[in-house]
Length: 339
Length: 74
Image 1 (cartoon, rainbow over the protein chains, first blue to last red):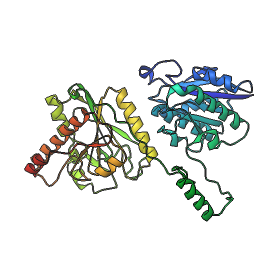
Image 2 (image 1 turned 60 degrees about the vertical axis):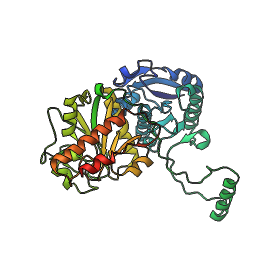
Image 3 (image 1 turned 180 degrees about the vertical axis):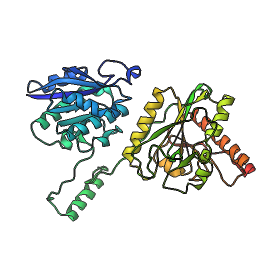
Image 4 (image 1 turned 90 degrees about the horizontal axis):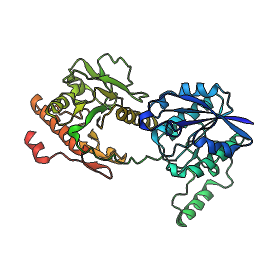
């Protein structure tokens, strides 16, 4: 019998919603929430020996702790989700299975193909879930089937609902490229517009947030991808291909003085930014508008990264982390300046 | 909402609320102006940004700056 640890978020653990989204990882023996049905589906051959749950706002940054808790009960495989299209939950599930696989454990996550966390699973397998929790039953069926196959030593394919990045393997095709090209053209002429041997990467479509009803009562944050940091760049922000974002306090400042701040962005001439850093982050005018009551208050820190050759996966992660952090901190709107 | 100069890219990647600015290296500035005029321009950009935040949108939407006001200050 194989031992499985199931990773879920605070919501599916029945702990709470946004009020509990900051809770750290917790180990519970046996299955919890959707894990109960999953345990039935993989029994009697396999057993969910424990569940690790964590709050959505912090989970993506605490993957090491999550894996340490999971490892404490000696699992053969770590399963995560289903996360549906939930961004923070999906990101956490993807990172948990990536880390589990790197630690030599079996791993399988479940989320929707449009989940922004999908790419972070790296080489660890992910199977498709439905879009929303209403599709829980079928999503668990597919996750359980995937777990069974993996534990039987088999690889998952698109037929098992596998999604995300697949390792490229060299294989002999059964027909020449010319023949396959003509076959594909015929399939497309026959009405299947999606048929392809090489699926292209997809940009996700962001659903616009509803408008702020009354910005004069809202806490507003300034954020930027313009690489603006304190002059000595204490957090060592990269000038290109950023792998991180940083936060700096603007408490008590009425503007950004030349010489105290500079842009480390490597994608444009920073002469004008360094001459007047408010050209990248408009703190001077934001303070005036705050004093006039145009909005209720300015968030006490600004968030910054460098948008220069930054991978889509990292940029997507920064966006998810910024949104979670700001929402948790009470900010209701963000003004992003982009170079 | 997004303040940026490369509007076509912002639309293509699906930024919901976009206010166009005057140059890539200075999203909230314009070095061709006097310091006082530049600050007035920055103020108008932020006021437009606040309007955008309070407007319902269903797809990438550009909130252009008022041309007449812009020209009067250049």
